[in-house]
Length: 287
Length: 239
Image (cartoon, rainbow over all chains, first blue to last red; front, side, top):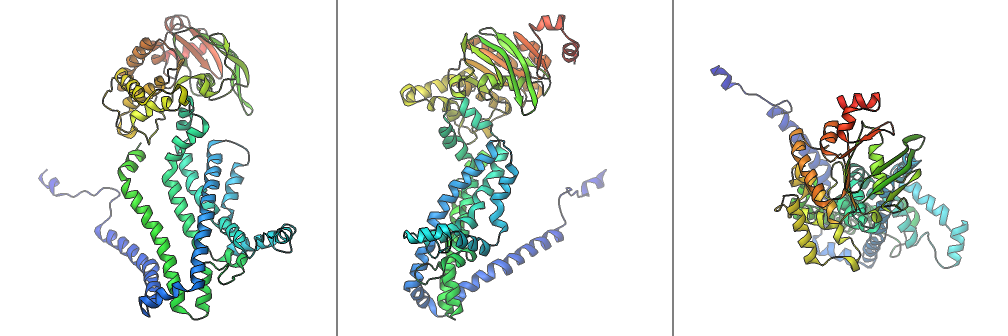
């Protein structure tokens, strides 16, 4: 049996080194070409006339207004969507009722409807020619071509993110822990605060980050409802497009680079949180 | 506490989980609800705990109608099938949960809560695990922590859903005696659900055999063994 020692066994799921390196190579090349290179190009383009020019273009009044508007929109629509998402996911996973599948489909609707169509719906609903819109404009609260319309459009487009992240997690966790809290005398609200919310916090964080990234980056729906009024209703993505169309490439790419950085910051934030709570994550996920 | 179940039925949509059943559980007894899956035993337990409400009938605790009491008002120490420990809390916080959830006026002080949790950890013979998370415990340890957590609220009764279901055979036998001891120490009326006839017969003072949402027989283990009331009971306990 001495030659048995020299035999090398490979586990059923292990691949040959060649296959492994080819797979890794394809993945790395794909990420480099499709994700990393374009990102680098944006930054390179922004800095073609130096850091000074890039910063100067960002200090422009219209650029400042666009940045402020985009941050305001995210600050309004993300918390609201987080609240709606939690409510929807909680309702769907903790209760049995007729039409549940239909409701889940409805939540996904914004993913399948083109953002431009969504924007047009809002214009139809709240535009000056509509009943509601006419009344609102007359009362001094215009929706379309103003902040409320942009927020509505953004919320419509980003609605599924939080709920979509939460539903599978909450289904997997079941209702037992909540029931246990109730039998121990906790009120419904206390149960939600001390048991439900901590159990979904990572999924919630992820959903909120995705929602935020999309809220800041949304173009199509916002383009329709905003009217693209420079310095008033033009968000960062819209201003970028306008600048680009006017061949102001340094200004366009500087703003684009800033938008990219905002997205990267949220991703870094998530990674930092995960690292900091790594042991806790491991402890709570192994069960 | 004496528990009286009076003509309780439960309907889920068009299917009857429980046909009207009546049952009287003497104070301080350790009662087994025994039956195959789908026999309605867990439904009955959840109705006692206030997690389900009956379609008809009444539940009486010490002669008082408790049917309308909310799950919180029942004050039942409920042990769930896979224990449902709060995975993001330490064992200490799990056991202290019910005390911390009390309204401020009746909530014990921090020191008092700590003292009680320590005492419960001693009772379940795991004094040193307070700082651990549920995922760092063995199945048997989790079961005992779930017991301690349920006992912490000073319950009026203990309700246990397949308390040994998630354990392997060896640990299961060891923990049977543990449950019996805790029952005898606390003197609480305890109801546990099981599909294992050996477990029911060995552990319980009173065994309720159920099938298809009906009670087939109620009796002491030796009586059920000696005189099975129906063909179903005879088949089931000889399995």
